[in-house]
Image (cartoon, rainbow, N blue to C red; front, side):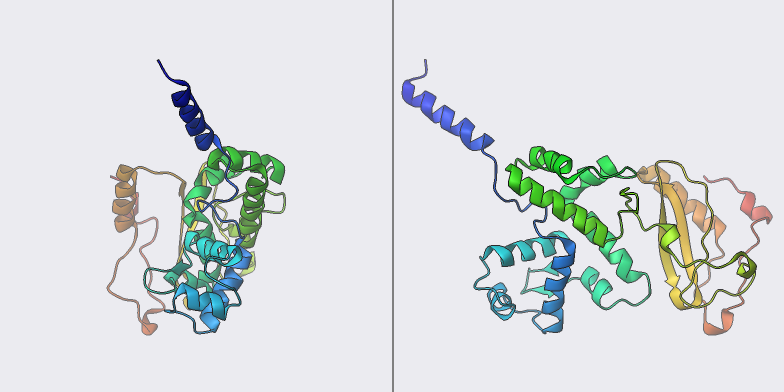
Length: 280
C-alpha cells in the first residue's frame, strides 16, 4: 500500500512530466530571416572561430546565455547554418547562401535550411501540398507535439510560417511546397526552344506530375545551362534508388569531362535503340 508521502511524490512526478514548457530547443523560436541577419554579422564581421562569449559581445549581446543570443545561436544550428564544435563557424550551407557559386545555390540553401530542422518534419509532411492553416491552428499542433505552453507554441508556429515564406516554400494561395517551384524559374519563349540557352536561364519543362511527386533540380553548370531535372515521389525505397541509378547510367552518355571546346557534344538520341532498355 502506498503511504501518503509516496502518493505526494507520485503526484509531483506526474505534474513535472505534464508541465508545459515556456521554450524549446527542438524547433527554432527565431525566424529564418532574423537568423540570416545574425549569421551575416558573424560572416561580415570576421567573427568565425571566436568563442560564443566573444561573438555575443561583438554582436551586441550581454552574454551567450542571454535569451535573444541563445535563441539565435540555437536556431542557426538547427537550420544548419552554424557549427560550434570549434568556435563559431559558418557551415558549407551558409556559404552556399552568402557566397553562392551559381544562381540557384542561394535559393536552394534556404530550402535545405528548412528541411534541416528535424522538428519541422511532421509539419512539412502534414501540410505539404496543402494550404497552411491559421497560426492559431498550427500552434495547436506545435503545442501538442512539443509539450509547449500556448504562448511559446504560437511563437514557434509563427516562426515556421515566416521561415517557410522566407525560403519561398509558401505559394500565393498559401499552399506549402517542399521544393522550389519550376514556375519560379526563368523560362524561355516557345520560339527560342530550338536555340542555344543563354547563361543563367533554363527552359521550363511541362512535365505531368502526380500528387505525391516533387521536382528536384541539380545544376551541373549554370553558365552553360547544364542542369538535371528529376521528378519523383517524395519518398522512395533503397531498391528503387538503385533502379534509378542503374537507369540513369543507361540514359546518359558518360564522359570524363566536357571542356570548353565540347559545347556541341551531342547526347545519344532518345529514340536510339539503347533508349528502349527497360529499367532493371
